[in-house]
Picture 1 (cartoon, rainbow, N blue to C red):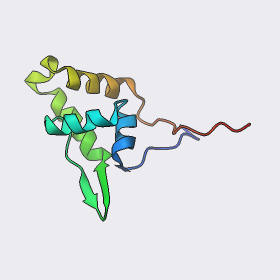
Picture 2: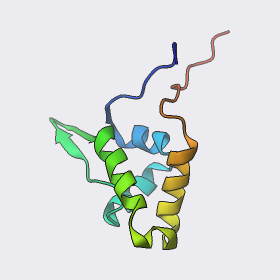
Picture 3: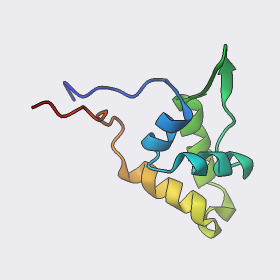
Picture 4: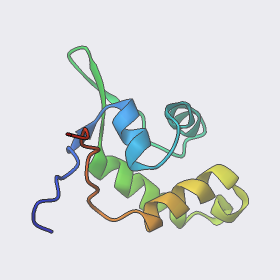
Length: 94
């Protein structure tokens, strides 16, 4: 879609949380539970590669225990409800 800014390929924790429509603290919990991949460190930056996160989520949807996990169910719902590219919030100009 023309004019729609794309999400970055590498995401900070807060950006990943926004993309998944979750609180930043939920990201930490999902990693601890093995439902999201751990981040990578690039210099001082802690980042997630979206391609890895997306693959991880797709694989997790195929696991038998998914339907019993409310957190993963929320992630799956957020992922399926969100368009592939979302606009970044723009400051309101008067």
